[in-house]
Image 1 (tube, rainbow, N blue to C red):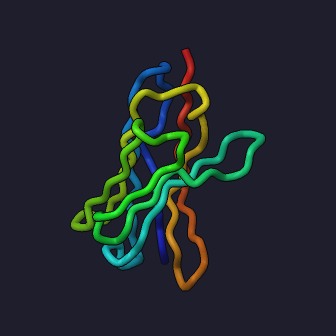
Image 2: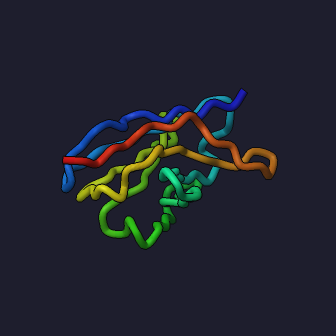
Image 3: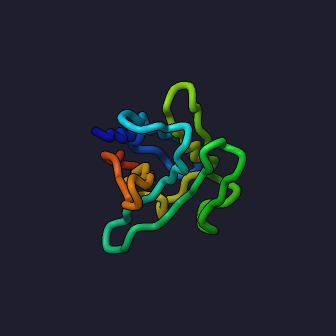
Length: 116
């Protein structure tokens, strides 16, 4: 069974940093494009960032460019999101996501709260 478990969220002050991790199992992680998606209360899902299977290509939502960095360690089956210069509007539940047989598969999310 595919498992995607995000961790690393928490409460942080504006301007602070967090590093999210997503541990993957039950899939050939090294062959999968991976994404981070966030759900903000009252809004629809926002695609935050995507990385290709080799880690050689990344893209970002305009709202996080220059502040967030996506990366992966295929030897550890783990996806990361380094979040710097956090803003209150980054408050959300963050999920890692991939496609399995053409369908989106979301993992368990991790709450990020940016507040003073």
